[in-house]
Length: 202
Image 1 (cartoon, rainbow, N blue to C red):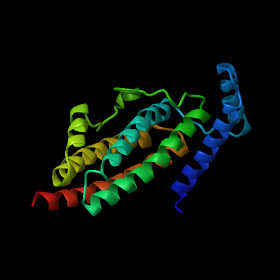
Image 2: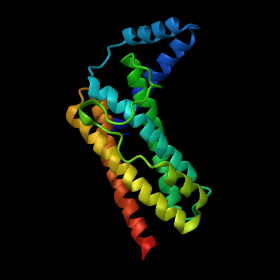
Image 3: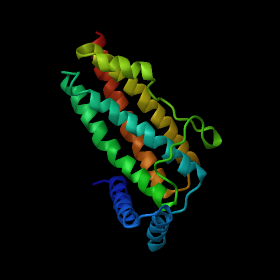
């Protein structure tokens, strides 16, 4: 298991503990106290506004990737595309949980998303527009695979740009480690998708 994956698992464990503590309370004030107690129980890693913005923007970005991956099994018959979609979902769903865990540790509501341009010009890049999402829902076979790959390549490129900004400007060791993993993983997947797409277009 890589160091990055170990850190993500550790953060997820902290997230589960925080959620368990907060769920024991009934009022908004009590829930906030629960999160604060969870934070006080362990040292909160140093972070800045860039770390918070990155998590708030990358969570919905990852959620759309998972949504895109969920379209594949019923619409594609390409085993490479099907396997890749499953891999993307399996990677990004835990990262969503880990980012929410860090926001909880920093006493930031993990359900609050940041849209548009963020701190120091960070933007939620590569998001697939509504028209493309609707069109994907109507396609099957090679037509679906082609548009899906094109959309996911652009989506991954946007995620890499955001992650590189976090690496440059963030201060949380956990978030920077996660962003570094995203860059390496998603670039490898872009290379794979580009190869699959070239085969479909020949």
